[in-house]
Length: 493
Image (cartoon, rainbow, N blue to C red; front, side, top):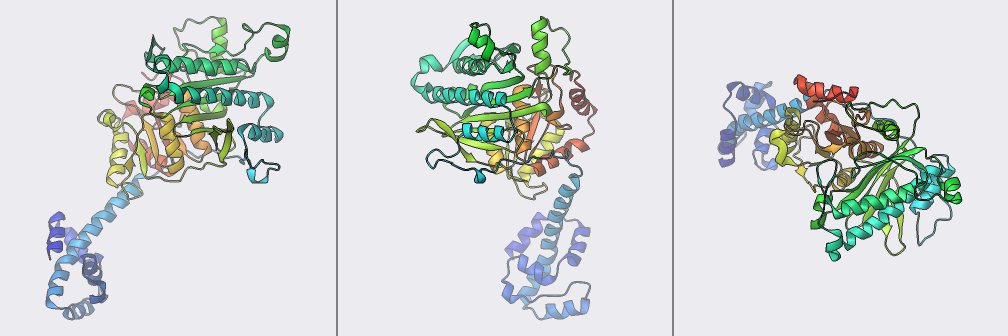
């Protein structure tokens, strides 16, 4: 009886709900839901059969009749309210964010011959197999191998940082172009990666988070002898953009960090929008024109996650694969031959301290995930590291949502489009996920500046579609205009 009266107290006293409740559930079902033993309550016809129902009720003990009489409207009203919330959540999901791009065939590693039992399939062997099939060329193979070697050095630096604090930890004393204090490891890892890439001779242009502007990718200035000018000093045909140490603000605390990279194919006819007021010389304009390409032009992207293990996750437009650094052998071994993100997750990842300043659709969506009033009907858990690589890596494996949305202070979010948002969006899409700014697909945005920022919401396809529904129904013209301007390559201010 206490349970019954508690349920009555929790239900708003709307008379139409109580009237409908008698038509919603059979008496026996309501009584069982209230907590009575199922074996003691026979199935009872509904109100649509008054005579049968009355006869069945007469067969119950007096106490059971009283409990049943109270429990039926209370439990039915509760069930009706829950069903109504689920219907509203389903009704909110009207549109897909966008049609997911077709995923090409991933390399079937099970058919490879002569795989060493001790080393397995290394990253170098994997690249050879891709080149054999014509899925990558020799230049892209060489660039990837250079990134592989550079990130092994960076992994070593991150591991040794606590033991060499004076040399590797703390501030460098300089501020980068974003206005952020540079850590010592920011500067060191940027040089490690930049030098490894330049000496391939296959890059025309590079752009880094730590550089003010794109730089030419060749090594001719340093290697001017006959061998290097003829063999590796040739004009490169790729553009590499990268963040050498994502999450470096937390590196002193030993928080997992990572490297993010994206690779474009140079296009002499690329349509580049130069932001007015930029004072660039001829070479810088050429570099910028090659660098400012939308994410949909990426031919490869990946990240390296430095944590309990060092993982190299990469895509060449044919699915997503992951390698783990074997410190004994000194090479990356294939450990995740085909990464696919779950259709829906149960985790969301964001800095929720900023939620009061978010746009209304984002705030409402996260509130729905918290309360369980979403399409899944279940509350989500929050997990947030504060390092994009770490948070996205978990989202890829477990599903759910990662978000760094716009807020009142940062109308365009804080993540950089070229070397954070676009590469990670390519990675997510190749795993079967989606990535949006709110109203639009991240991969469709043409950059107008090297360090342009955008909001990012990425993750499982069903979760992102649901989030998109909140933005689609939003009637805020300023929010829609900001998204439209990004797609047009116009200012969002």
